[in-house]
Every structure is written in C-alpha cells, then in structure tokens.
Amino acid sequence: MASDPQPPLNKSSADEQAIQSQFHRLRSLFKDSDYSTHPERWDTLWKESFTPWDRGGPSQALDEVLSLHRELFPNAPSTAHDWDKSKPKALVAGCGRGHDVLLLSAHGYDVYGLDSSVTSIEEAKKNEKRVAEEDAEGKWKEMYAPKRELGVTTKGRVMWVTGDFFEDDWVNDSGYGKVKTGFDLIFDYTFFCALPPEARPQWAKRLSDLLNPDGGRLVCLEWPLDKDPMTGGPPWGVSGDLYLAHLGHPGQLLQYDDKGQVVDGSADTTPVALKRLARTQPACTHKAGYDNQGNVVDRVSVWSHQ
Image 1 (cartoon, rainbow, N blue to C red):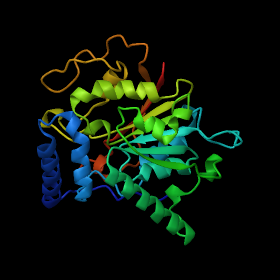
Image 2: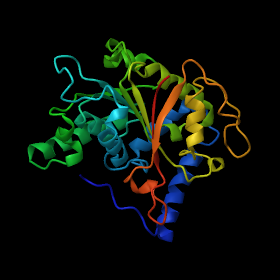
Image 3: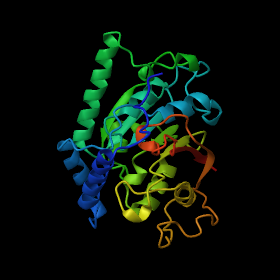
C-alpha cells in the first residue's frame, strides 16, 4: 500500500513557525468576513497556489475504514454487486485536487468531486490526468488501483463538478438529480473544519438531505482534534462531540459555551438526524493528524440515517 509521508516525530521550530504562518494567513483572510464571500476567497487562494490543506495524495484513513470495516458499508461495491446496474454513488465536497475522489473510484464508486473553486476543479482534472498517465506507463500507485482484494475489478466513473455545496444548481448540472435515492457514501475531511460555526447547522442538514436513507454512509475524518476552537479558523478546531451534536440536530442552531463547545449537544435528536455507527482511531493518517510524539490524533467516524 502506498503510504502518506511519515509522521513528524519531532517537529522543528521552523516547521512549527511555517505552520503557524499558514494558519495566520488563513485566519486573517477569513476573519469577520461574511460567509457568502468565502467561496471567492478560497478560489483566490487556489489561483495563488496557496493550498496548505492539500495532502498531496489520498487519505490512508479513508482507505483503511473502507477496506477493514466492510460491515459498515452495505452499499459498497463488491463481486456481489449487480454490475448491470449503476454503481453506488459517492460524493466528496470540497474535493480540492481530488485525491480522495480518485481513491473512492478505485473502491468501485461512481464519484462526484465537488468544489466551489473553478481553479480547484481544474487542478483536480490535471491530477486525474497525471494519475492516468502513470497508469499507462505501468506506474500504478496502489492506492489508486481497483481494490481487487475487495472484489472490485473496475474503477468507478469520476465526475468533476463546480458549485456551492449548499445550493441545488450543481445537483442538476452534474446529473446527480437522476440519482433519486441519494449518495451511498459521502466523505468529509477538510470541509467541516473550514466552515465557520454559523454554517455548521446547514452543513449537517445538507448532509442528511443528500445521504441515501437506505444504507448510505457518511464518513468523517475528524481533524484537527488537537486545536483549541477558540483560536479561530480555518481550520477550526473540532471535537468528536461537535460532530455528534450537529449531525444529531441537522439544521438546528446550537448554543456554544465560552470554550467553543456545544452546550447540551446530547439533547433529543431530530427525525432527520444522523447516528454514529462507529468511531475509530486509524492506524495511519496524513502527517497533519499526528502529534509531536508520532501518535495518531485523527479519528474516523461513520454515520447513517436513523
């Protein structure tokens, strides 16, 4: 299996300063700005090639949960799937260069890579072409190869879509509107943590609306879990309880305390709530998900309709 860069066992002060400088620029650009202006700001960063959130490859943590916890994904492609019918559909919102879109394609899903930035989608298409060229040259990156050990012999299709996750235009333009049941898998990594707190209720409601109620699964790679939410964002510091609270109350405004945590997030859930099926610590993740001692901080949670 292809591996992500090795975790930083001892980050140098120069590394820390570089990371803090990147965070400072992001915070400065988005601080006190109306959320409606955020898509344009993200696109500006893509145009400037300032993309510190880009991982340079697919998520090992996502690959791991799909490979080792098949029981959590009843709609996953396999040899038992009727290939005369359409493949299960997956969505990666805020897909960036599309590394995880290509990974889900390797797992047999037809995947929609969605981003509000036109420049981002252009970069994703270039990335897809590069991977295809490496394939033609016999330089398969194993993470992008069909998962034959899981019964997947052909990759799923990839559709790149530019649009606002919270609006419906991209749904119709992409052809997703023909998928009446909803997405069978949705992956969220650096999307939730990029949203200001006021956008989180809408995020949870949108995911609930887009997820197939019959076996659909939302996979969240929770990051950054070791950052104080009061330092601002993006990326905003998150917690497992934060996901649990918002996904349990899609569309509802929740009260936060002075530490940036939801107050009474365990209150009765709503009919459109998503329930957490599992929350695991991956064996491997991107280097940003390790602490200075080389311990994995990231967690992967899997969700479904109730």
